Structures are given as C-alpha cells and as structure tokens.
Image (cartoon, rainbow, N blue to C red):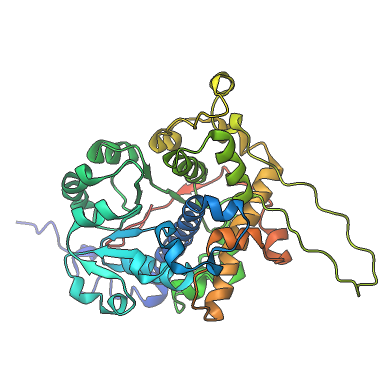
Length: 405
C-alpha cells in the first residue's frame, strides 16, 4: 500500500529549521509596534480623562502639581488592569514611568500576583480579585487571554459603575459582543491596521516600550491623525475618546456649556508665550486661533437646539459611537485645522511626558498643567498633523498570548 505522506516536505523532521531570527523579525516588530501604539494611546486617553476630573483646577488655570496632595487625591484617575501577562505589564510600566501615574492609583488583578513584585515595590496593589478591581477603578484595561474574557465579564459586570470605562486590548471578542457580555455601553476597543507608512523596523526590538515612546519619530508614528506609521489606529477610537470625556463631565452634572468650555481649554489651549524683550527680529505673526468644539459637533442640530443652558449633555453610548456614524465622525475628515490641532495635542502631551520622565521628575504632572503651559516643540507640532488615515490599508493581526487589535 502506498504511503500517502511519503516525500511530503512538511512532514520531514527538519522542516522549518531554516526559519531563522531574520525570518521572524518582521513578526516580532509587528507585535512590538502594536504594543507601543496601544500603550501610547492608553496613556493619552488616561491623561485626557484625568484632565476632565480636574474641572476646578483647569478653570482656575492652576497647575495641579502645585497643590497639596491632600486636596487633589480624590481627583486622581484610578486605573485597573485585568491581566498580568506581557501586555498588562507593558501597560503598567508605561503608565508608571511615562504617564507619571502614582503606584497607588493603579491596581492589577492576575492569577499570579506573586510575579509582579517589580510593581508592588512601586505601590501598585497586585492581587487576584476582578470584582474588587472593577468596583474600584475609573478605567479598567482588559489585557487577558480571549478565552478568559467571557468568564471575566460574567464575573464583573454587576460591579461596574456608570462612570467606569472598560478599555479592551483583547482580540477575537468584538465590540458588540463585549457590550452584551458586560451589559455596559462605556467600552473602548481600539482597532489597529497596517498601512503603507514607515517600515516596521521603526519599533526596534532592542528598546523597551517606554524607551521607544521617548523617540520623537515613534511619537509621530503613533499619532492618531498624524503622518501614518506602519501601524495606525482606526479613527473611531479617537471619536470615542472625546465622547468619553464628555461623559465624564456629565457624571459631574456640569451643564453642557461648561463642559464644552472646559474640553476646549484642555484640547485647544492658547500658547501664551511671548517673544523676549532682547529679541531684535520682529515677532512672527500670531498663529490662527485654534478650532473650538461646539455642541453640534457631538449631537445633531435638532437636539442641540432643545437644550437649555443648565442641561447636561446626554449620556453617550461609546459602543454606538465606534460602530455607527456620529456628528464628530462627519467633522473630523473634513476639518484640516481640527486634525492638525488634535495631532499637535497628542504629540505635545506624549513628548512632554517623555521629557519629564527622562528628567526623573518625581511629581506627577497632569494633562491640565501640560496643556495650560504647552511645550514649544515645533518639530513635533509642525509635522504631526499633515493627514488622516489613508484608505489603502490592510487589517492587522497579532498572535501574542495577550493580543491587541
């Protein structure tokens, strides 16, 4: 009888041995790039969300880091991470080292908390109790295996508070399925795509994620509305970020007029820097005023006209924002000035955080202080807002044990 498997190359013992490190490098760079992008965007989201909790300090234009800790402790964002594997650890490092969040504002729930001693010594509470974490955190990052997610959701969904945001970095579980599992509409799930932009070698496997995000080229490559790198986040994520900020103001019972005022101060600060008296050359012409969000950018005109000055914004379903068209999704592709301003906002925030991290600044500098005293990083600002995600893209996938998409 003939052996059907005879002479089949794939069944030979040595098949695949020629796959060297060089062959695997593109896959490793791809996985590293996804992690760098995901961590950068998570830090930006957390910084923006914390700024919305500091309404009084922003309004008074007082840097939060100059206040007594006792007065501001309740304003600090509480961040929970479910999953202590590769992605969970990288995210925690970036939040601590680059984002500047204190250890006692981060908790990690994992089956093996004893493996997280490096975070425990920094004040991070590490344990295995998903319900406790969800009941405590303002933002919960899901960094677990896809196979574990249904059980985790059934375990924690009753502990979720209305103001809590779930931020999923897990593949294979769609946004609509997450909404069903968690019985919540406050869910963000960034989706990443490969583009025809810069090569994957930009991520350099030898660098840590924190080190990579101190590189201006990497910051630009991760910018949501900047020149596209090899990996880009779909624009729907950015829309949901701003709607989540408005939900934060609504939780504080702020009238929609005040919410817009504060959001514009956070996102589009006026650079108050003036030329030196010793400067002999004439000052450059003032830049055009930044674009400002208005009510109709987030809700339709008919509903906006029905609001009274004391009304809050409606509660926005973040899953619907990411799955359907919204007023903001119609505005972003058409407003070049808005694209440039948001790109500059992102690059300035990440660049300043990286600068302060490099200088070993021990006190946390929040987004409110960063944006009320913006940096003058002209290279980042000038180059970061030149376009939006190209249409010629290819869906990205990853095979990490704790995946990002």
